[in-house]
Image 1 (cartoon, helix red, strand yellow):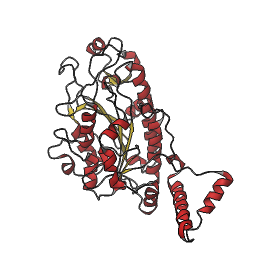
Image 2 (cartoon, one colour):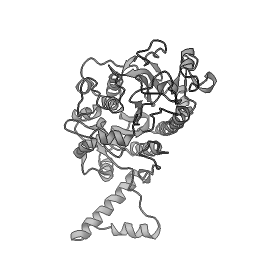
Image 3 (tube, rainbow, N blue to C red):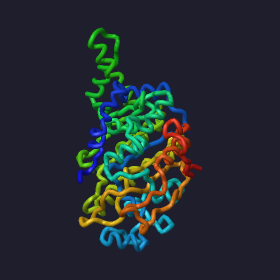
Image 4 (cartoon, one colour):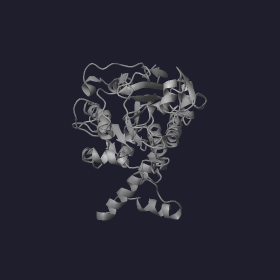
Length: 401
């Protein structure tokens, strides 16, 4: 089976064409708006973390004491003493020590058994469903994009730090902005002084004025948003194993939040979770990267009024099958846990843990519809009516204090 990476999904989804809706927007536009129209402190901000590839939920929130879990994964299962105890017979993957501390502090909620009706084992169809919130029929708009359509139609309200705008942020009449994580570092020393002087006047005629304005814009942007915007993810983007990439994205989000950027939603991601072989080491490494990036970000956010209004959602397109395969990995499954974290969050478990002996053709039976998670975030973080975005009949989950 072909693995899913961020790049493959974003390109195959056609999101590159959607990004034209935000064409011409860049970091300088965001910096200008941050100076002239900052987001008031205390305004809810949502950070969406997408884990591409289908993260194995059973080795993330681990039922280590369940004999059925141990029997289904004799060489892949974690022992009870290896996991970080959460209660209810469950424990976090041992690589997630930072999130365990936030759980103990009451700032992490784990929604169990999340999926959508009639699950599909295809990466592309499943991720499309999660990003569009339309499990019954394909659609060209994402759930945050539809929120943009009903909330001022401002592209800078929702920003992706990924290379291509994800369908998540594409609306019918509005799309969020895709901003690159490079290009905002200025040279230092004498060269930097000369470079700054070159941009000191925009009164000259013709091309000189254009160049001067461009340099002045760059300096204003760096002054406002800071050099952290010039994040440098490591190599391996196509393989989905970019070392430090998620932390780099979240560092930029943190800077934007602290400076009062007018964004209400940020989209970041990490790939590599399609673990058909040698899963245990690969997944634990990836979850450690996620844990360090997310817990570091949330610890930083807890230090400011603006940061304390941030809620983070982390999800993947599906979980994995209960039984290990012959390659010490797991194949595409259905339900999995969703993490919601931040200072506004009421920590603890939400929903029931799917049973390991009452399966649907080897797959976990879902407990919670993913659209109910979205409805709760729209209401609790963005202050929006979920019905125009998700349709009628959605439930609200106890995720917020």
